[in-house]
Every structure is written in structure tokens, then in C-alpha cells.
Image 1: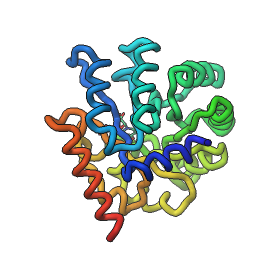
Image 2: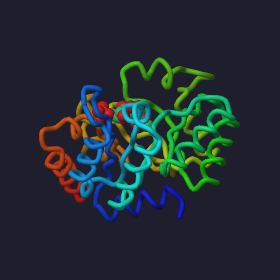
Image 3: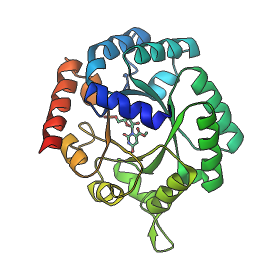
Length: 243
Ligand code: O7M
């Protein structure tokens, strides 16, 4: 079963479109234990876990593999977010390592070009993994890159075309970019939206504007009661979808 269907099934089973960004602060001691504790706490309220440099840099490959096994034991998908953005050979080596560690999908930057993105998607698919492509990031400076006017249109619309053309499994558009979310909602690829809470975006607004999955980190991970916060967001979204 392809990644796109695996994560849709997980979201359906958990009744949650939340992708937990497992972004632990550097001050935390015993990162693997804290990661496991967080997954156990919120595992019923999310459909996937996304790991970024916060864990992929400090932990060993076997520590990451163990976290991925725990993620899978909860029926969740695991996404490696190191925003692949390099030459073909380097991206392919990264995909090899990441899939061996048990990741189900990787994030890629279409800035590398059509050919590079297509090669990356092919490599990932061969390994049974998905690719999610950046289209418009959530931070204020995103407009200086993804919003640049090239040939009379925003670079993001070119990135969307590249993602579709390459056969990517989803795209990333910030929850802080509601106009862009509304624009891309009309097309076929599932939209993953980060920037909720800590960066000022709102979960319900993002869903109503076209997001399919919400990537949420600090507002859950750093909460005194992560499960309570995740559950609250989950039920708020369920209600707003029913409206
Ligand atoms: O909820 P936060 O702000 O604590 O965390 C958001 C996570 O999403 C964090 O891991 C970021 O690196 C990531 N992210 C963004 O915040 N903005 C983007 O535009 C893209 C991502 C991302 O996940 O890309 C895949």
C-alpha cells in the first residue's frame, strides 16, 4: 500500500489529521525516553509523527529505528523532515538511510528542479516511501523564496506543478498562508499544513481553508498535558468538519 493511502487510513482510524512534529527542545535529557513518552501519551489523537533535526541529529540510527517501531505499533506513520534539497546522489543516499530507519515518507524541496524531484520520488517509491514537497512555507520570510515572482507568477505555483508532475504524495503549505491554502485546495494532492499555535496559525481555519493534515509541534510537545491539548485540537477539528 502506498504511503498516501497508509496515512489516509491512519487518519481515518484515529479520526485525526494531526501529524505530531516531535520537536523536542535541546534542553531535554534522555531524548529517546521523552520521545517514547510523548508518543505513548498522544498516540490515539494523531495519525503520524514527523521527526526533524531535533531528533535525527542527536540520536543514533538504532535509536531512531526504535522510535519508528513504537510509532508503527500505534498504527501511525512516520515522516522524516530534513527537507531534502541536494544533488540527486546525495538525496538518494539520504532516502536509503531514512527508509532503513523505518521512515514512511520524506520531505523534499522542489527548488532542486523537476528532474531532481522526479528522481527523488522514484527512489522513495521504490523503497515503499512517500514524498511530500514544500510549496509554501509557514514563516514570515517564506514570501522571499516561495512567493518570489518568476515569469509573472509565484514560485510556489511552479513548485506545485513540479510536485504534481513528479508524482509526489502531498504538499506542504503553511497554516499562516490561508490565501495560498485556498488556492491549492482545488487540486489533487493532500495538503500538509504546519504553523499552528506557536507560529500563529489556527487549526480549524487551516482545515476550512483546505488543509488535509495539520503538522503540530510545540503547542502539543511542550504542553504540561500533551494528550489533553492533542485531544482538544482533534475534537475541535472533528466538529468543524461536520459543520
Ligand atoms: O508547531 P511548531 O511550530 O512547533 O512546529 C512546526 C513544525 O513544522 C516544525 O518541525 C517545522 O520545522 C515544520 N515546518 C514549519 O514549521 N513550516 C513549514 O513551512 C514547513 C515545516 C515542515 O514540517 O515541513 C515539512
